[in-house]
Every structure is written in structure tokens, then in C-alpha cells.
Image (cartoon, rainbow, N blue to C red; front, side, top):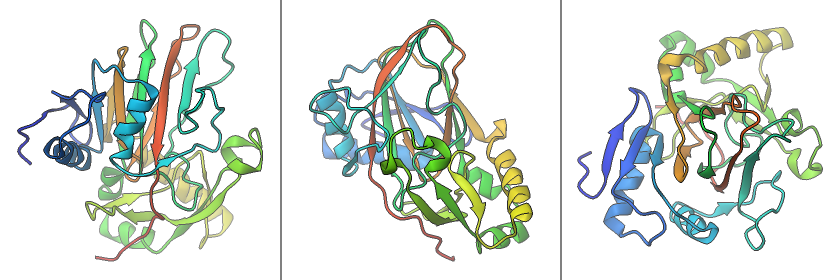
Length: 273
């Protein structure tokens, strides 16, 4: 696509682009939104620099892509904004969420369409986020392997990640296709991840474990990734339906702080070509 309203600068071959010429705190014209949607579909994850948004303005931007999702594990730290998930780490943190490869809340019957993370404080060095294309992971397989995977489903369980830390509201378990069809692009994407996926339904336990470990290795290859170096007042917006991500916690004891919103998605499906 030719962009005339925004600047789009790719940062890696398979995914990732920085978007310029946009102030996310202001209402955006329809033609600008059209190009942002196209940039997300083309690049899977897009980044914005030098943004200043209130929680309400961040939510207003997110609502232009769909209904907002209240994260089941989110403590309500921003009064009046239950849709805001506060992302925070400092010298007192014992762990952080997202430090392993995953797709957000894939245990839900209708996992999120995407997430928008806005960081206002970042460590002096480190704290990058890695993103990987699940299109590229699927495309890397032989035709025979693709046909095999397209006939399988897998269970995703919230208990695997949250362990009851937030009560029964995070213990959703859902069965999803191992390969899903993106509802916008029509492309095929691998849809299993080590945080939430427990097993492949059609296989014996040892077969399932072996295949999942193989698939995870494919999803974590550097060749299909991009790496975002955060600066204060940066925004990352990723398509959860075709991207996995991992946050690096290599900056202890420094602070990292921001807000994340999540956009509701649809039930994943596989559609044969």
C-alpha cells in the first residue's frame, strides 16, 4: 500500500514498523485511520514514538479498532478505568508478566484482537520487547507438515499461567485450531504458545509434547522476529491473532511503567483455502 497520511518505516523483514506523523491523543481522521489499519495488517506490530496520552485518550484510540477487553488478571490501579492494565516493574518486583513467549490470553474462548502498550517510564538500558510472526512460522513448514497441522486443535488453559493467583476469573480453558485463518488478511498463522497451550487434542501425550516443543522452536527463531527498543512515551500495538511477544526483564532494579489496553477479538477459526 502507498501511504500518504502517515510515515511507515519497516524495522524487520517479517514484521514491525515505526509509524510517524500521528498524534494518538487527538481524534484521527478516517483516512488516517484507514492507513493505520493497513499498516497494522501489513506489519503485524506497529510502533509510535513521542506520544502523550491520558488513560482516556489511550482508550479512545483503542476503541477505534473494537470493544475494549477488561483483562481478567488486571488489578484496578487506575481509578475509573477498569480496561487499563498497569504494567510496572521496579526494585521490589519478584516477577513480571510476559517474560516468556506468548499470545495474550489465548485461553479465552475469543482471545484479544490486539493490545496497545504505552510506556511512560523506561530503564536507562534494556527492557526491549521481542515480537515474532506466526505467519512466517507457519510458512516455514513443508506442505505436508502444514496439512497435518491444519487438522489439529489444542487446549489453552489460564490455570497454566495464572495458577489461581487471581481467582477463578482467569481459569478459562478453550480449544482452538493449531493453525488459524486471520479474519482480515486471510493468511494462515500458527496458534500455540508455551504459556497457555497444554496439549494437542488429537495426539497422545508424548506425541503432543514432542510436537509442541518442535513448534515452539520454530516460533522463536530470530529470523522471524523484530525487536523494539523502548523510549519513554513510546507505543506498541500488536495483532494478537498472528504475533507472539516476549518482554525482556534484563533491567532490574530499574523502573518500567506504563498502561496497556486490550481489544476484544473473535473466536479463532481455520478456514481451508
